[in-house]
Length: 223
Image (cartoon, rainbow, N blue to C red):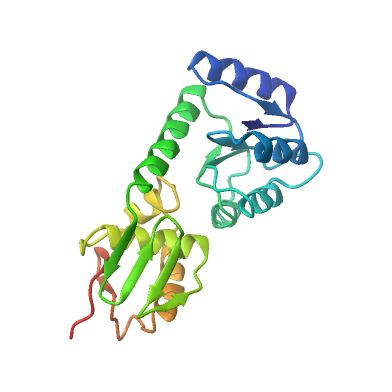
Protein backbone atom coordinates (compact mmCIF):
# COMPACT_ATOMS: atom_id res chain seq x y z
CA UNK A 1 0.00 0.00 0.00
CA UNK A 2 1.40 3.38 -1.07
CA UNK A 3 -0.15 6.53 0.44
CA UNK A 4 1.34 9.52 -1.40
CA UNK A 5 -0.42 12.72 -2.50
CA UNK A 6 2.02 13.72 -5.28
CA UNK A 7 0.66 12.18 -8.49
CA UNK A 8 4.05 12.13 -10.21
CA UNK A 9 5.88 10.48 -7.30
CA UNK A 10 3.02 8.02 -6.75
CA UNK A 11 3.02 6.93 -10.39
CA UNK A 12 6.82 6.61 -10.56
CA UNK A 13 7.04 4.58 -7.34
CA UNK A 14 4.18 2.36 -8.43
CA UNK A 15 5.90 1.54 -11.72
CA UNK A 16 9.23 0.89 -10.02
CA UNK A 17 7.81 -1.27 -7.23
CA UNK A 18 5.73 -3.31 -9.67
CA UNK A 19 8.89 -3.84 -11.71
CA UNK A 20 10.47 -5.24 -8.51
CA UNK A 21 7.62 -7.75 -8.26
CA UNK A 22 5.32 -5.98 -5.77
CA UNK A 23 1.56 -5.70 -6.16
CA UNK A 24 0.81 -2.06 -5.31
CA UNK A 25 -2.38 -0.31 -4.20
CA UNK A 26 -2.19 3.50 -4.06
CA UNK A 27 -4.09 6.38 -2.49
CA UNK A 28 -3.55 10.14 -2.47
CA UNK A 29 -5.20 10.90 0.89
CA UNK A 30 -4.67 9.59 4.40
CA UNK A 31 -8.24 8.63 5.29
CA UNK A 32 -8.87 6.78 2.03
CA UNK A 33 -5.63 4.89 2.51
CA UNK A 34 -6.41 4.11 6.15
CA UNK A 35 -9.83 2.72 5.27
CA UNK A 36 -8.40 0.49 2.55
CA UNK A 37 -5.57 -0.72 4.81
CA UNK A 38 -8.10 -1.85 7.41
CA UNK A 39 -10.27 -3.55 4.77
CA UNK A 40 -7.55 -5.29 2.74
CA UNK A 41 -4.63 -5.84 5.15
CA UNK A 42 -1.56 -5.16 2.98
CA UNK A 43 1.81 -6.71 3.79
CA UNK A 44 3.46 -3.31 4.21
CA UNK A 45 2.48 0.38 4.02
CA UNK A 46 4.61 3.18 2.54
CA UNK A 47 3.25 6.42 4.03
CA UNK A 48 3.96 10.06 3.19
CA UNK A 49 3.61 12.62 6.01
CA UNK A 50 2.49 15.69 4.03
CA UNK A 51 -1.00 14.51 3.08
CA UNK A 52 -3.76 16.95 2.06
CA UNK A 53 -6.51 15.77 4.40
CA UNK A 54 -4.78 14.64 7.61
CA UNK A 55 -1.22 14.68 8.89
CA UNK A 56 0.62 11.43 8.17
CA UNK A 57 1.62 10.94 11.82
CA UNK A 58 -2.06 11.06 12.78
CA UNK A 59 -2.83 8.44 10.13
CA UNK A 60 -0.05 6.33 11.65
CA UNK A 61 -1.46 6.68 15.17
CA UNK A 62 -4.96 5.75 14.02
CA UNK A 63 -3.57 2.78 12.12
CA UNK A 64 -1.59 1.56 15.13
CA UNK A 65 -4.81 1.49 17.16
CA UNK A 66 -6.16 -1.27 14.90
CA UNK A 67 -3.20 -2.88 13.10
CA UNK A 68 0.48 -3.81 13.47
CA UNK A 69 1.12 -3.82 9.70
CA UNK A 70 4.70 -2.68 8.98
CA UNK A 71 4.83 1.02 8.04
CA UNK A 72 7.68 2.77 6.21
CA UNK A 73 7.37 6.54 6.30
CA UNK A 74 8.68 8.13 3.08
CA UNK A 75 8.90 11.91 3.31
CA UNK A 76 10.99 14.97 2.51
CA UNK A 77 11.14 15.90 6.22
CA UNK A 78 14.64 15.25 7.53
CA UNK A 79 14.46 16.97 10.92
CA UNK A 80 15.71 14.63 13.66
CA UNK A 81 12.91 15.62 16.06
CA UNK A 82 10.35 14.74 13.40
CA UNK A 83 12.06 11.42 12.69
CA UNK A 84 12.08 10.44 16.38
CA UNK A 85 8.44 11.55 16.83
CA UNK A 86 7.33 9.50 13.84
CA UNK A 87 9.23 6.35 14.85
CA UNK A 88 7.88 6.65 18.39
CA UNK A 89 4.36 6.93 16.94
CA UNK A 90 4.79 3.45 15.46
CA UNK A 91 6.68 3.65 12.17
CA UNK A 92 8.94 0.67 11.43
CA UNK A 93 11.29 2.65 9.18
CA UNK A 94 11.83 6.21 7.94
CA UNK A 95 13.29 7.14 4.55
CA UNK A 96 13.96 10.70 3.40
CA UNK A 97 13.20 11.86 -0.15
CA UNK A 98 14.72 11.70 -2.66
CA UNK A 99 15.40 7.97 -2.59
CA UNK A 100 15.68 5.29 -5.24
CA UNK A 101 13.12 2.56 -5.85
CA UNK A 102 15.87 0.02 -5.18
CA UNK A 103 16.44 1.50 -1.71
CA UNK A 104 12.73 1.46 -0.93
CA UNK A 105 12.47 -2.14 -2.13
CA UNK A 106 15.38 -3.09 0.18
CA UNK A 107 13.69 -1.39 3.13
CA UNK A 108 10.40 -3.17 2.38
CA UNK A 109 12.18 -6.52 2.36
CA UNK A 110 14.01 -5.62 5.59
CA UNK A 111 10.88 -4.72 7.59
CA UNK A 112 9.09 -7.81 6.35
CA UNK A 113 12.10 -9.94 7.32
CA UNK A 114 12.23 -8.39 10.81
CA UNK A 115 8.52 -9.02 11.35
CA UNK A 116 8.90 -12.62 10.16
CA UNK A 117 11.89 -13.25 12.43
CA UNK A 118 10.23 -11.61 15.41
CA UNK A 119 7.19 -13.85 15.13
CA UNK A 120 9.32 -16.93 15.77
CA UNK A 121 9.85 -16.10 19.41
CA UNK A 122 6.97 -16.62 21.82
CA UNK A 123 8.60 -15.21 24.92
CA UNK A 124 11.85 -14.31 26.63
CA UNK A 125 12.55 -14.71 30.35
CA UNK A 126 15.37 -13.05 32.28
CA UNK A 127 15.11 -13.45 36.02
CA UNK A 128 11.68 -12.20 37.07
CA UNK A 129 11.21 -10.44 33.76
CA UNK A 130 9.01 -12.06 31.10
CA UNK A 131 8.54 -10.61 27.62
CA UNK A 132 5.67 -12.07 25.61
CA UNK A 133 6.60 -11.21 22.04
CA UNK A 134 3.30 -12.17 20.42
CA UNK A 135 1.07 -10.13 22.74
CA UNK A 136 3.72 -7.45 23.46
CA UNK A 137 3.10 -7.79 27.20
CA UNK A 138 5.92 -7.49 29.75
CA UNK A 139 5.64 -8.63 33.36
CA UNK A 140 8.12 -8.11 36.18
CA UNK A 141 7.69 -10.54 39.07
CA UNK A 142 4.16 -11.16 37.83
CA UNK A 143 3.19 -7.48 37.56
CA UNK A 144 2.36 -6.10 34.09
CA UNK A 145 4.54 -3.14 33.07
CA UNK A 146 3.02 -0.29 31.08
CA UNK A 147 5.54 0.25 28.28
CA UNK A 148 5.43 2.45 25.21
CA UNK A 149 5.96 0.85 21.80
CA UNK A 150 9.62 1.86 21.66
CA UNK A 151 10.26 0.87 25.28
CA UNK A 152 8.96 -2.61 24.47
CA UNK A 153 11.04 -2.85 21.28
CA UNK A 154 14.15 -1.69 23.16
CA UNK A 155 13.62 -4.15 26.00
CA UNK A 156 12.90 -7.04 23.63
CA UNK A 157 16.05 -6.36 21.60
CA UNK A 158 18.24 -6.21 24.71
CA UNK A 159 16.68 -9.36 26.17
CA UNK A 160 17.08 -11.25 22.89
CA UNK A 161 20.81 -10.42 22.92
CA UNK A 162 21.25 -13.00 25.70
CA UNK A 163 23.44 -10.87 27.97
CA UNK A 164 25.61 -9.54 25.14
CA UNK A 165 26.63 -5.88 25.31
CA UNK A 166 24.58 -4.01 22.70
CA UNK A 167 25.98 -0.77 21.30
CA UNK A 168 23.92 2.39 20.91
CA UNK A 169 24.66 2.25 17.18
CA UNK A 170 23.04 -1.19 17.01
CA UNK A 171 20.04 0.01 19.01
CA UNK A 172 19.58 2.98 16.69
CA UNK A 173 19.75 0.68 13.68
CA UNK A 174 17.60 -2.18 14.96
CA UNK A 175 15.08 -0.42 17.23
CA UNK A 176 14.85 3.04 15.67
CA UNK A 177 15.95 1.89 12.17
CA UNK A 178 18.38 4.79 11.83
CA UNK A 179 21.64 3.78 10.18
CA UNK A 180 23.48 6.91 11.30
CA UNK A 181 24.82 8.47 14.47
CA UNK A 182 23.89 11.66 16.25
CA UNK A 183 20.82 10.46 18.18
CA UNK A 184 22.45 8.79 21.19
CA UNK A 185 20.32 10.92 23.51
CA UNK A 186 17.23 9.21 22.15
CA UNK A 187 18.59 5.86 23.34
CA UNK A 188 19.69 7.31 26.68
CA UNK A 189 16.27 8.85 27.36
CA UNK A 190 14.41 5.62 26.57
CA UNK A 191 16.85 3.61 28.69
CA UNK A 192 16.21 6.02 31.58
CA UNK A 193 12.43 5.59 31.23
CA UNK A 194 12.84 1.82 31.01
CA UNK A 195 15.02 1.72 34.13
CA UNK A 196 12.38 3.58 36.14
CA UNK A 197 9.73 1.06 35.13
CA UNK A 198 12.06 -1.79 36.07
CA UNK A 199 12.56 -0.21 39.50
CA UNK A 200 16.23 0.63 39.07
CA UNK A 201 18.59 3.44 38.10
CA UNK A 202 21.86 3.82 36.22
CA UNK A 203 23.64 4.21 39.57
CA UNK A 204 21.96 1.10 41.04
CA UNK A 205 21.22 -1.23 38.11
CA UNK A 206 19.47 -4.57 38.39
CA UNK A 207 18.70 -5.68 34.84
CA UNK A 208 20.18 -2.93 32.64
CA UNK A 209 23.93 -2.51 33.02
CA UNK A 210 25.84 0.16 31.12
CA UNK A 211 29.34 -0.71 29.90
CA UNK A 212 31.01 2.68 29.61
CA UNK A 213 32.11 3.51 26.09
CA UNK A 214 30.62 0.30 24.69
CA UNK A 215 26.86 -0.02 25.26
CA UNK A 216 24.33 -1.70 27.53
CA UNK A 217 23.39 -5.26 28.38
CA UNK A 218 20.38 -6.87 30.04
CA UNK A 219 21.14 -9.64 32.54
CA UNK A 220 19.47 -11.47 35.39
CA UNK A 221 19.88 -9.56 38.68
CA UNK A 222 22.52 -10.82 41.07
CA UNK A 223 21.04 -12.82 43.98
